[in-house]
Amino acid sequence: MEPIYMTRATLNRLKDEAQYLERELKTTIAEEISKAAALGDLSENAEYDAAKDKQRTFATKLQNVMMRMNRAQLIETLSISGTTISIGTRAHLLNLHTGEEITYTILGEGDYDLEKNIIAYSAPIAKSLMTKQRGEVVTIKVPAGEEEFIVMNIEKVFN
Image 1: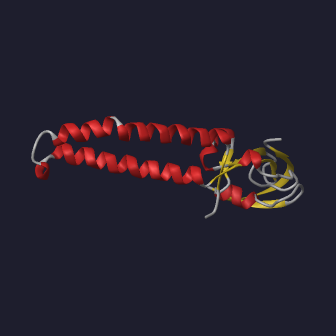
Image 2 (image 1 turned 90 degrees about the vertical axis):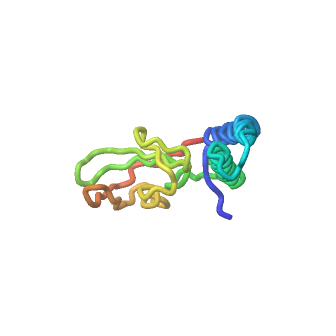
Image 3 (image 1 turned 30 degrees about the vertical axis):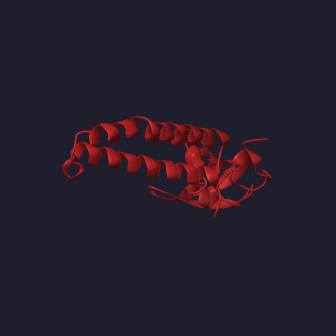
């Protein structure tokens, strides 16, 4: 299986989410199922069915979180050159048509923050930028069509 790249902060958020889901499954949801079962006939017990559905939903979410944690590869531990745009780098670009400068930070799936131009490595913009070096021109698809940028500088996000 392919690793899922993420920062330590995202991995910690996943751990917290897993603990929450486990706690809910073992306590709150288990109590809901028990109370609903005590109401009698399970074949026509809407409360019981709802509690079991909630249990399945939480169990599926927990399974997904655990899978992501097991496949996690911390970006902070990667060997990053800083000469090529990759996961864990910040790319400083210049729009060749408008002269506008923009910086993208390429991190993991759970790390993105569009207001700060932090994008996931799987995002279309990141895919366009990957492997580019300083001085190269890259075409990026934007809502209005395509724009050409030159890579002005590349820096590592983590030292």
